Every structure is written in structure tokens, then in C-alpha cells.
Amino acid sequence: MQQPANVEIISALKLALKSRGITYRQLSVTLGVSEKTIKRLFKDKNCSLNRLNEICKAINLSIYDLIDFAHHSTEPSTKLTPNQEFYLKEHPHHFAFLFFLITGHSLEQVQQTYQLSDLSIFRYLRDLDKQGLIALREENKYRLLIEGKLLVQLHSPLHELVRSASQQFLNYVIDHDGEKNTRFNASFYYMSPETLARLDEELLALSQKYRKLSHQNEMVLPKEQLIPVAWTTLVAPYQICGAWPLAELEQ
Image (cartoon, rainbow, N blue to C red; front, side, top):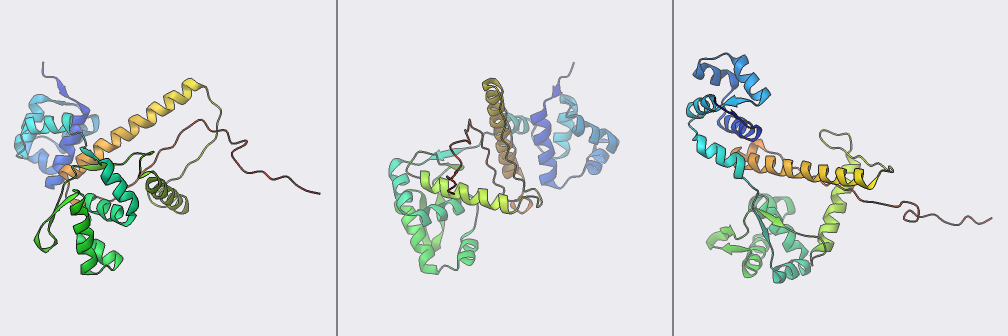
């Protein structure tokens, strides 16, 4: 009996169809089945290997590449050396410039947004090249020497930069709560240590899930179909009585 493909493979296949601009209707015509059958396949995330192979052939995709992508597409990341961390700590604008490059912003976009001179752009690139973060070439062409996402940890030399960026993001979300896909939620409850541990595990699993999904999106979808998204999860034992300010009231 043919085993059904798992959820990750079906999700990766859906992304592959979208990246190629192939609709469910077009796929159904190619395979000689009803559009309802195709929709049910993706809705139920249940597909035999034979059917999966047929779909891959129809969209000119190797089934082995699809399976490998679905199961092993972990997000690459790079940890800075101590010297690089100390340099970026002392040069926070260079840290921001580097982060823009890593996240796919073009030099033209950065220059136009911040109204930087050509000389400033060159100096940023030259300095990052000296720190071994990029390889600078002629005419401001460069190659990133950081693979994937930049792994910046708390309690490192960059701690204050991370704190500042996180606080700025938190303020933005609070100010824009209720706008499209922007949500702020804060609660205070009493719960058992076991419930707290379970909540922590579920938040971690959710974060890992969407990290992987966003990495898959970046791998198979054109950049113009993607939007920049940031998210932060916070959970901790927190005693508000004593942490919040409370003043003596004088007569």
C-alpha cells in the first residue's frame, strides 16, 4: 500500500506550485482529475506517493528534491566572532547596515531611505569588509560572508543593541495594535509550574514552526511576494507586586 505524504511535504509542494504560478485548476487539468480533488488533497494534506510523483512530474520538480527540501530545509545561521561582536557593539550603525544587507535590502534602498552619500555607502562596505563580514569587490559589489540569518544572542557584547531593537519593536506593536496582522496581547495569571513549562514548550514549538515555514517561503517564493515580519514571544515567572512602582501617599 502506498503511504501518504506527510504534512511538511504537502506544505512544500503547495509553495512550489505558488512559486511557479500554477493554480489548482491548472494542475487538475494536467492530471485529468477534478479541481475539487486537488483542493481536497491540499486541505487534508494527504497524498499517496504515486499521486505526489505525478504532481511533481507535472510541475517539472524532482520528488527527491521536494522531499529533501521538506525534511532538511533547516534555517542556516551564523554566529559572530567575539572580535566582530565587540566591533559592532562600538559601531551600532554598522550593525544596522549589516543587518539590512543580511535581510535582503539593496544598497540603493538603504541609501535612498537614509539619504546617504556614495562615500558613506563605500565606507560602510569597506569597514564591514575589514571585519570579515563581507567580501568587497569593485563598484561596491559585495558578497556576504554570513550564511543565512545572523545569530545574535542576549548577554553578549551586542546585548544592549538587541534590547534597544526589541523595545522599539514592542513599542511599535503596541502603537499599531489592531491594524492588519498586528497584535499585542498581555496577560497576568496564576498557574502551576507544570502549566508554565507546557506554555513555554508550546511557544518554542510555535516559533520553530514559523521559522521553518518562513525559511521555506524565502527559498521558493519570489521576494516581491514576501513581506517583512517580526515577532517576539515573552513568557516568564513575573512578580508584579514589587516590580511596578508604587509611591507613598503623603497627607
